[in-house]
Length: 243
Image (cartoon, rainbow, N blue to C red):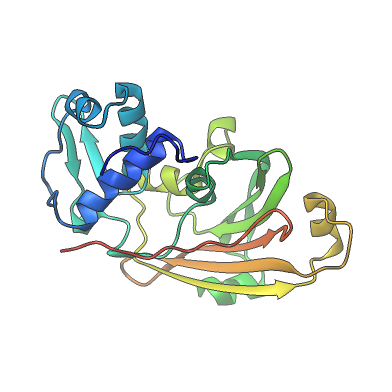
């Protein structure tokens, strides 16, 4: 599949999509070493920087894994995010639309679970949870997310983490999910959410609840996200990773 120079998608996204299709179609088998950056750059007529960026995206999405001094291989199922992936991160969604994305504001703290959160996570009231609140968007705020995480690893309260990808960080710490549940509805956003997202009328907004489970069916993450419906269209894609 050649690069389409008239396509509005950046070259690295087009390359990422081509390479991902090779994995999903079984052209590249699990554990197989993929061609080098130089070989791929020559094949597709793009720079090695473009290839490197595309591969880095696939690494963060758990399709590929890198080993220093060895090369890049197709990730095996036992360490992949999941065989069925319905969920995309906000960063990936925006990338696929060819739009920039960034974290505009973020706060992380350790809290005690209230009755509602204790019920959701099936833990004791008062047990610790990480709470990550973020505002993300491009030039304007697009979403506000309120995330709660079991403290199974230490999460750094650093600028690098707060402004980066949550799922990419979790995967770097060997935290993988095997199942997600999502519920999306149209709601009237609370006043403080409207202020954050710069919503000035009473039109319905998108609200998403996401539950993320590990291989033992233990809930690791619960997130409530409000989207400014004027600036965002909810997207979901399903991929099947062949065994």
